[in-house]
Image 1: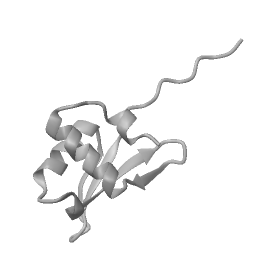
Image 2: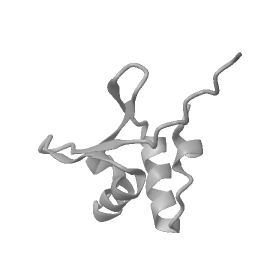
Image 3: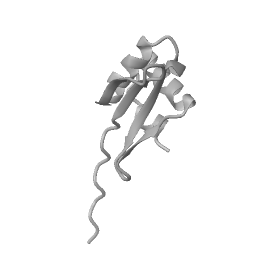
Length: 86
């Protein structure tokens, strides 16, 4: 008998200021990460990381992924899982 796969955990994010290296947010959901991205002048001003539970480490998002996350926030979409999984 096969067991059903565990449901996927919600994505967790960390946002770090690139100039000061100060952590602005850690272990926040996508909505909170999008709010931080909307508050900065440019997505290049921060580094955004997503928690990878399989390897238990933070993975830096590409600039394209950060831009996608910011644009999803501007549209008010919650579809980040499909847009950032890969």
